[in-house]
Picture: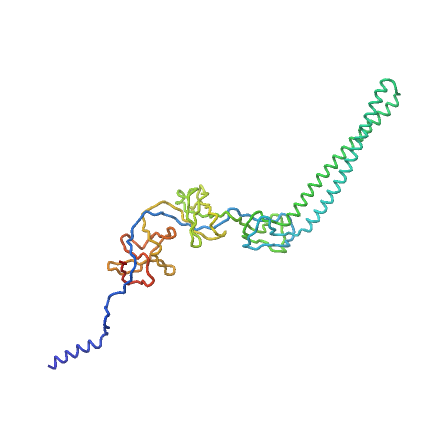
Amino acid sequence: MKILAGLLGGMLCVLGCGERIEPGRTEGKPAAVRASVAVARAVASPIEIEVPGTVQSEVSSLIAAKTPGAVTEVRVREGDRVRAGDVLVVVDPRQADARLREAEAALAAARRAAEAARAGRDAAASAAALAEATGKRYRELFEKEATSRQEYDEVEARRQQAEAERRRAAAAAAAAAAGVDRAEAALAQARAAAADTHLRAPYDALVAARLVEPGEHAAPGRPLLRLEKEGGLRVEVHAPESAAAAALPGTAVRVEAEGKNHRGVIEHASPTADPSSRTVLLKIRLPREAALRPGAYVRVAIPLGEAPRIVVPATALVRQGQLTGLFVLDDSGIARFRLVRIAPLGEDRAVVLSGLTEDVRYVVAPPAGLIDGMRVEQPS
């Protein structure tokens, strides 16, 4: 009896000292959530190679000084948008303005001289015409012996003198007209030089770089600003030589920038590869509606063909910091978080490059409370 009592007491101690099991609790059964489940299948999908690139304007130009002098004004800063004809930089215009006034005065004097020369030419022409008519009349009289030889010789001498004066006056008028032409050319040059002190935008553009400040000296040819023309954008990339066969002019490519995809078109592909980098230069035209700024970083996806690959909806992907994964189900329907490596395929799908194989079940759209180890039940 004592032995039996001891055994019963030991059993009660074990039951009393152990962990208590609350009513309604089932040990080892994980919590369950309802979610749609799909089976991974390989489907024909595009194969792409991604290369980095930089957005550029189709037209980029340097605004350089055309005349020497101190820079008195710089009216724009980097990032400003300007319109065609806007004044961007002013180089000290005082000397150019003085030469312009001198050229204007010289032209006015040349025109006055030309007017006087024309008047002298016309007067000389009239006198020569009168002398010619008088000489003709005296020649007829002399032939009829109605006047003396001396009178005829005097009239002939005056005719020749009037003709010489006419030719001299005509030459003077021509020289004066040439002087007007030279003065007009000098004035045009002076006006151009004066205009060159005000550097203007050749087209609607974005100021990409400001290379000068007021007070600095501008020399002919020195770049002062860099402009990127608005409207046309393109991307230049260096694609691997292995992609050259697929990267032909006219090929559509996907350009990813700032989380958005744009459709670009290859407009130029270098016919030769760079021997040092083994890459091919591609120039890709972007659509006008792509609101990107020159200098923006992009990734260009060049299509290489199609191959069977596992494609999942973007809703299945769970991002944890820099890592991407999805929930797969084991044979018991327990969710397990698995890291995968993906490549975007449009805006609503992704290609799984590694981490998922065919016939594995995965959660299509993980609910907010789903964690590793939970049971997943499909909605009825």
